[in-house]
Amino acid sequence: MGLVLGIESSCDETAAALVTSERTILAQRIASQDAEHAPYGGVVPEIAARAHAERLAPMIDAVLKDAGKTLADCDAIAATAGPGLIGGVMVGLVSAKALAMASDTPLIAVNHLEGHALSPRLSDPDLGFPYLLLLVSGGHCQILLVEGVGDYRRLATTIDDALGEAFDKSAKVLGLGYPGGPAVERLAKEGDAANVPLPRPLLGSKEPHFSFAGLKSAVLRAKDAGIHSDADIAASFQQAALDCVLDRLAFSADRIDPVPALVVAGGVAANAAIRSGLEEFAQARGMRFVAPPPSLCTDNAAMIAWAGCERLALDGFRPDPLDIAAKPRWPLDPDAEPARGAGVKA
Ligand code: KG4
Ligand code: ZN
Image (tube, rainbow, N blue to C red):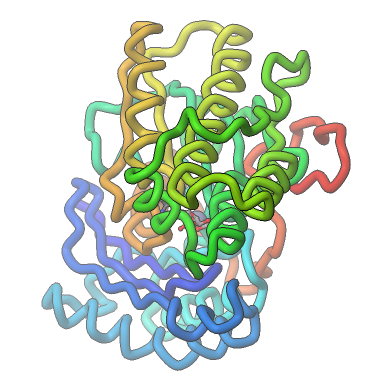
């Protein structure tokens, strides 16, 4: 059995976890920085990096103590090495390097997106490769064909905003504060999704990609018009977003050989309405639907430790060198063609 210490610090969550190759999370801690960033309505990179630097070392100590383990018990130390806010990523990666060097333990530099992409295999031992993955977070919105550890084919991405970003910006327009996704979801439960006519950008497009900028602007116009309740706007936004997601998924699913499972990961995967829409989609296509529990959807270190376990189990595993650099950008599929469109993010 392998034991991996995972470290996550790429955005506004400082997190550490100890996970075994048998899928047991022995200990995990997570400190959100919501309170620090809330006054600014979004994540301030410098504040995030400083908060990670203050919290990470005591948190790693605490996680080891919680599990009754020491660094000497770990088979590897896995840390997010990108993509993300570079200051925060550096804090986590440098800490991991120092611990790896001091304890003579292998370092595994994990792509944060790979952490999300493999997280469903931590919660579901029966999920094998290949699977169709909808990866929806604050910075990314992609459809990927996951064929193995380190083997990702990007089928679609967003040409402007990520889905989580659209949730966050809509929340801001509706005065719901930061972070916005969970707040929009709560308010949407009180509203009628049929009441506010909102656009579904790129629905039926011959390109595989997503776009959410127009939907976000339409939310702003609907709010300014002052006709509809905030709850109706939230519900209508969430429905429009789901319609776009399902249409784009159908486009990609129709163009690949059938795969047995549809999987969702990333922060937006915590949204119950999105999850149930995806589940229906999967059922209608005879696919199994797999979604990690909401606590493993939003940023956490267990998924980073698990990605480390997956790497450790590969034939010919090699640790990463201690001089590996933190990467602000790091696509899962470096060979994917750039999406055409203004403001492409991935
Ligand atoms: O994966 P994640 O925690 O961090 C990134 O890697 O970006 O995703 C954060 C994003 C935020 O945009 C947040 O608003 C969104 O996920 N999110 C949600 C929900 N919970 C988190 N969006 C919609 N509904 C939710 N329940
Ligand atoms: Zn994330």
